[in-house]
Length: 384
Ligand SMILES: Cc1cc2nc3c(=O)[nH]c(=O)nc-3n(C[C@H](O)[C@H](O)[C@H](O)COP(=O)(O)OP(=O)(O)OC[C@H]3O[C@@H](n4cnc5c(N)ncnc54)[C@H](O)[C@@H]3O)c2cc1C
Image 1 (cartoon, rainbow, N blue to C red):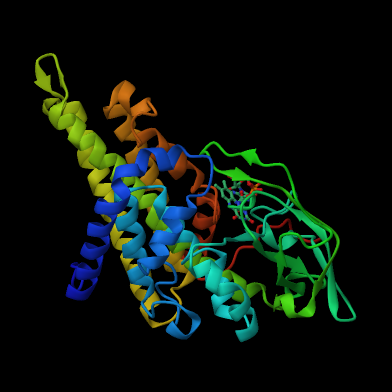
Image 2 (image 1 turned 30 degrees about the vertical axis):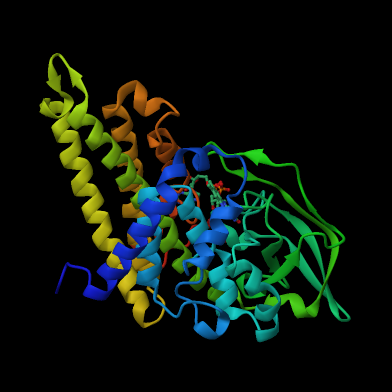
């Protein structure tokens, strides 16, 4: 057992860190507060080979591994938290499921722009009545000649106001076995992207409406029975969420540490007060614990997909550590931590959202408990 990164992983992380400090750190505050997606930065990251890191080269990716993608997201987030969203969008989100299951024709149509940082794909899974209970989704796809006709609605999709392409979970028939997914392009008749609403973290989301929206059969991603495959892709997505949560916690921790070394009250530096030293000791320990679980899950992904158990454990630990470190860092920095002059309050808002998105911390604990007892626990009421 070795707790150090391999030489190759360390060299990769160092080179991403140098690029991020040089090109991204200077505009980090403005980028975090900008209303719109940072398209220019996305294209810069694409040119740097930081989109599609773990995708096969024949798909336009870099042929790296999940561990490389995790390292990249961390190093980018440590310099510019907002830019890590771009690395997420180009490596872990719905794009990952797309690359896993799309046909060569679909890849040729959509991947070049997505991997060039010129377009975004958004995931339409959650519905007004199907959140944690994702399999209760109602959005339907009915076969009609050469098309599917889609009806229903989706909520909370990340990047929905800006995306050109949507990976939409749909129901072809009853039960879990009736669920699959389709690709819907913005501008398709019968598909409306609603007026954007704001999340507490500053991101915007639009409700998606499908009313007799007709899409060609060529836009089928996974037919009936596809749900389990989609969820495997979703497990990988969890590592991107985990890496960002942890890295934003570290970002806030680093800011607070610098502050505590310099800021004086009562004639002493803040770092000399034991009440604050103990906060730093706990923050650091929690960040390091979560880091090990994240690397363990990412390394499992070097040889296939990481297990649901490992990704759930990594996400839970990273979500909690990232949020707690950000929140404590804000406390240590007093009014400056709470002010939008520093990015610590941004880290608090962002890490809080990831405790709900991509599998809430409660649903993760349900998953981990199944591993503890070696059996599944239905969350539904017993049938009469
Ligand atoms: C920042 C952000 C980004 C998101 N991005 C996307 C996206 O890109 N695409 C998309 O489709 N969706 C997205 N979502 C939606 C997200 O997946 C859902 O919010 C999440 O699944 C929870 O569903 P819900 O909000 O309906 O809450 P509910 O399911 O109503 O849950 C409410 C509370 O009850 C708890 N709970 C529910 N069931 C159980 C149970 N069995 N045991 C214990 N506790 C339980 C939950 O943990 C939660 O605390 C995003 C959400 C956020 C906050």
